[in-house]
Length: 407
Ligand SMILES: *Cc1c(COP(=O)(O)O)cnc(C)c1O
Image 1: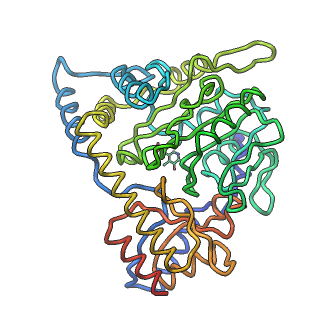
Image 2 (image 1 turned 135 degrees about the horizontal axis):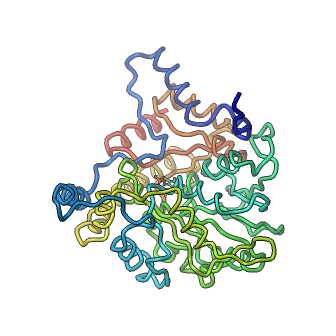
């Protein structure tokens, strides 16, 4: 019989979102007419921006002509999109990131997983706790961890707590790690990293020859002008950081699929005593395993940077951030302790009266018919917290808040 990858068996059985679905189903079977409002899963809800739709329609028409038809595109993405990204997301903020350091892909979720393909098996790895579960699970699947303990912490992974005691700042470790995952603005806590904090991280990485994997999927939600949108705004980051970005949250591309990863040419790793540049390995990996994002979708992504596109995505992001503000204000006035939600579409709520995250989930589901996400699903340090997302219609957010406030 064929052997399976037994590392998959180490994954915790009750993964977060299936367990949420199970509890919702259970609730629905007992309460047939309940009007549930879902502020749980981090998916956007508003329609695609017009500029993106128009660009995609034009691209489809082009594909229907002899001269405009395109087959396989470059594995790295079309140069016009990469140049647009370089100019608008990086050069405009003083980051010297060139088009050929940008790799277009069909998602940050897969890029942040696939990156492990080009990294060794014996790196000492650190993640924050709570954390986006993808970083942890992909390390488990690829055999980079041992088994999980009762709290769900994996042997061989190192956890950097971010919680109210440290003001949701990822503290610089005393230990030496080789690979560190950071995500700011943070999913799930909505916390942000200041320029000073990221500077300390870059210094740490340079002093320890470490690599930072920086997930900036939520940079568009930053309202505070003093906060960095990219890790490359920090001097020296080009020598120690890879950045992941996505059109999923800023432009509503969760169902359309387009993202990109920045691998500076100056980034180095080691194979034995030999120095190797990571750019070449990633380029080789993408060329072999990936055949690019569709022309149509890349034209849609390019339109994000047009004048109309910029206005439309600003409005889109603003809409969700107004939701976040409504959530924060209502819950705060109802006596909850609420973190995040100022520069991120997530409110991170301390559960009242030391309730566990899952008890609070059941409580909100039954008493307010509102679905959120238990903090403990994002890691042991998320216990006692609860995530509400701003991705919903205004009417639903207002109704959900009214119900919670009236409890
Ligand atoms: C939504 C999200 C992404 C984006 O993933 P895509 O695969 O590009 O849709 C990346 N990182 C985090 C932390 C996210 O929440």
